[in-house]
Length: 95
Image (cartoon, rainbow, N blue to C red; front, side, top):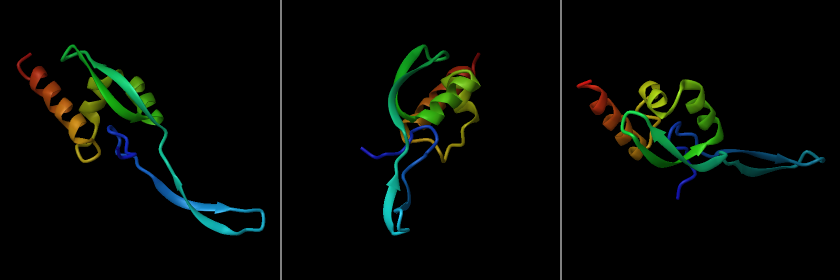
């Protein structure tokens, strides 16, 4: 399972551990990922996604999964999230 947020595309970054003696060794900064269940109001169902804590706050701030995906860039989304976005758009089109 990759360590990438499904909604923002946030992944591991690299950097250095710096000791008191200023010795530097490589390290990885991993995103704070949580497996959460987010509900879509339009589709009236829930989806299990692996999302970073910052993306989860953004989803709440924008007013839910539907509103977040409407504004999200397609290249940042995972294949699963992109399918959800297209399903929501399709469901909202005739309405």
